[in-house]
Image 1: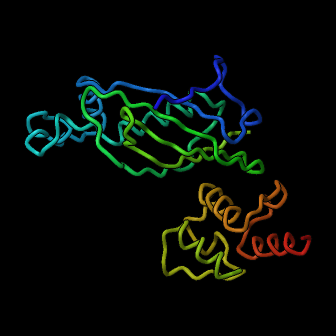
Image 2: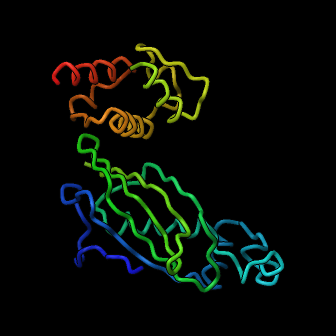
Image 3: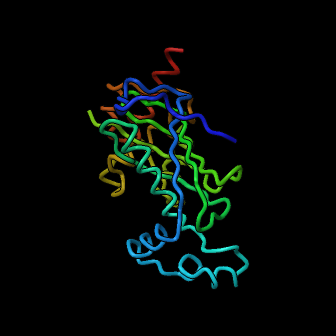
Length: 144
Length: 77
């Protein structure tokens, strides 16, 4: 299922420009080098993520992508598309695994805007092909 | 209304034993910081189907402030 991207522009969106229904997307291929980098960053060297043979021994087709690595794409969404916004909270369900070499596509749809607090809530889904691997909610707050 | 607010506070602060009253404030709940305030406002708005104004949000210092704002909404129809 192709995801609609945000309108083409180079400048990040200001709070006043956002409205419910707008969707922001990004994508990333999680190859072996990326998983290795996240292992070093996180200190998580679980064989499930770090060792393809071990992962296959557990019934997976290869190294499992770190869920928290995938969630890092939400930081890209906020930092790339929104002007002076900070993350307030993230809720995420890891609904299916993704594997080394997979391309994960992220869509974040504006579902609520709280003008008094300059807060924007986004419904998040991450797709591996047609499979939803993460679904959740991201709340941001725009600085005055 | 206070029971509904109490359920929201229990959920936001992940404390099933929390019992708030109208005088409960951030002095009574150490985790009641600016992030929790955002989550409280969003959760209360969703539950009661309202959107608070900037003035209302600025005045929210205790549970009773939420109660009074919601009652004012009801009174104004």
